[in-house]
Length: 90
Ligand code: HEC
Image (cartoon, rainbow, N blue to C red):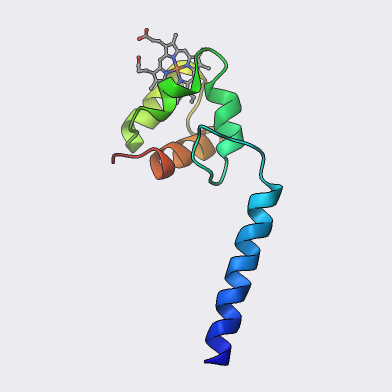
């Protein structure tokens, strides 16, 4: 029981410190690479265009290629992963 409590506490504290360090990425859902996606995908249009869409892998890659560049580049993979994870079909 003590052990369980301890691990729960550890998880909560890690969660909090990460949130405090993170940049403000709203209206993009918080998550890995949210700041990168916000920067990359709001250069030409507002964030609402992006956050109201639902990205499966195929669409995310297509949009990235169309608007930004190679979806297989390091940055492209990060953006595609973010889009499909946090703005996927829902
Ligand atoms: C170089 C400028 C530019 C960048 C950077 C850009 N977009 Fe766009 N985006 C546009 C334009 C222009 C439109 C409007 C296209 C139209 O009228 O159909 C658009 C429209 C959209 C749409 C609406 C659906 C559609 O296809 O019309 C979505 C979703 C979208 N962009 C997602 C993204 C994502 C995700 C990123 C980041 C990976 C991104 N955009 C980056 C220019 C850009």
